[in-house]
Length: 350
Image (cartoon, rainbow, N blue to C red; front, side):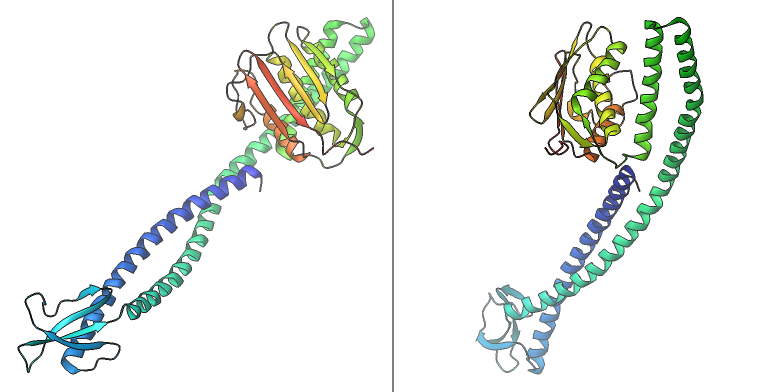
């Protein structure tokens, strides 16, 4: 199960479970209040039996003067419970039957424990029902996602033949007429298509696990050379000392490519991209349009421009998480964007 499927499953499970738990809680609270009233009614009945049969187990009795403030057969509560009853042999006195607060609280506690156990049983049942509901609701989504992924995989596979053919023909054409800037641009554009293909593959499959040692400076320099041809109006400046990284090179190259591509694509005319290494932090800063909502740019399909499909920076975040490279973004509209990669966990030990 993929991350977004787990997220959908957990959300539907929790929403349904919380709804059921709230309904159960309301029902059991109502039952608790009703049962408490029943306990008080039973206490009153026990008092009546005590007054008429003198079987007063758990009750205490006393005789008090009769007056207008003392109504008969009424249950009073003042800490504990008590009630007044007529004494058949006397018109001056009333029999006061009392039930202690401690005994009442014990009965209420026993009731609460019984309802808690019952609530726990129904909660387990509610969790089971929520689980079944979540699985059932997720199945159509999974089916649709699988069909979508298979469709994208088929498209990617079908792209390989014409793209390979174009690359071969361009190389043959280049041999015939020699180096040519227009041919170089065509090759770079084809490489951009291949880069998009690789983004989609990573989006579908995930990140390969193998690691290797490589020079950060050499890798960034080669990628800058590639993007300088694609974006000739943008100046790429690099200030990186020698540093060796140990991580998945292809995945890290994909991170750098996506960031340099965005920095060039959304830059202003005659803008700049500065790639600077300070300590273990690699910063890529551009003079572009900036981002309106920087906190959202790593979300899947989020985009603020008409260009692109909104997965480039999402893939950057996904790859950074896989390679344990913290990434931070700062941006101001009409001033530019700065993205910082913390490489401390992937720097090769000396």
